[in-house]
Length: 325
Length: 197
Image 1: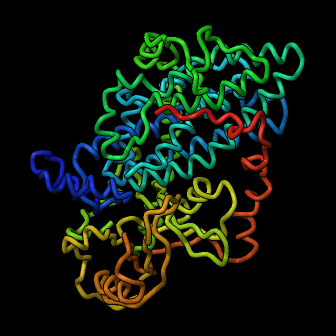
Image 2: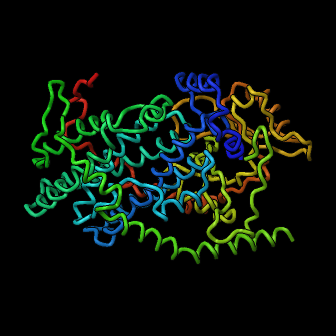
Image 3: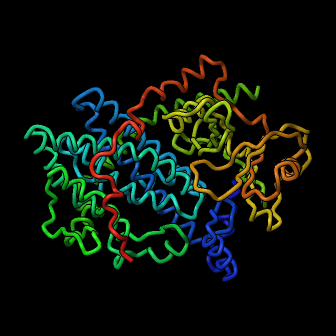
């Protein structure tokens, strides 16, 4: 494939010239999309593969916390909605693996990196889902935060990633709205339903605020990511957008946010209290949370599917052999 | 895909692969309605043409609208970007048998969920010859080209009944549409805090 061959010619950063970089940056500044086959710095390629494959893994692992609740949905409608949502996450993983492949990463390498624990995925999916209301709260908060991030990435300079994000955002909006609809109903429902919604909010609020990543001052990759139009907004900017949209709506329902320091500044922005980053990093590193369980589930599914993959391949090979006769 | 400046590496023959190596990759083209052209939407991995189309249906047609899907093995695609052409890039030009090629192109940098659109079909003796003919027919300012022999395509069934069975169910699953859910709470525009500089 075009891209793969060029990658081999272009993995040595020492062969990159200032002129090439200037021309590349001028293209991005001019609003052009970089496409497979175009010249790109080796570091741009490396960062994108890292980021897009992590993003794909997150979609795939993201099926697990919610998938557990499909058989326990309270109504057929809710069950259909949840199945569609989990199917979407699988599809989003596929779109993103495709985007990473255009940069020369192979599907096997990426899947192996996830299954072996070498690759990271979003730590939000290592929190347990303890009640049905978590399904709604994840839809509203976690997917709400994800949409803010992905809307930003839809404007990114790499064509295949941008296109995957546009497609994902339109589907993700359904996830966001169904979750919100559910929580709005429970918040206005019986005392038990209200308590369920509040409990879910209390547990999911901080993880959703953290999932947008470390503060700008502690973010390692941001300089090069913004110069090359990969990330066009900083973590804290995206987090601010998330807070400004979600805080007033949650308060409007009479729910309580677990942040005593939360307040509005003079411009009307909602300002959160200090974040417990130790908790965040412990979950990222798998010290706490369900990292081990999630990977075990993924590995079991992969291993259980081996016979299917084998059968598919045998069938495909037989067809090819027949066609060759 | 066959590159502009090099022949692609021979894809590993699938029958030498162990079950967990990568299946062949297929690029998928989706047609939204009968009056629209097929557009490149992404890829799937699959062992054979039927598998590719079924997978494509699950990945790219969970929602309306679709009336047709095409799949093409990635190594059957010759691709080139404007930048590559500006740098003297060429597609394979060894004259073979004259055959029909389907031509796809990307016209602008607008935000989109699809890549190249089908532009038409023409007869040529090589991908490079097809590209040159396409440039004079469709304009030479395009941002990216895909040139693919028509014989490389497999498509979803075209009889009405099967088209229905493939694509109609998505239309009834309205709960998947964001439009099925009302706006809840005050509208964002009412609040609209001034963005921080």
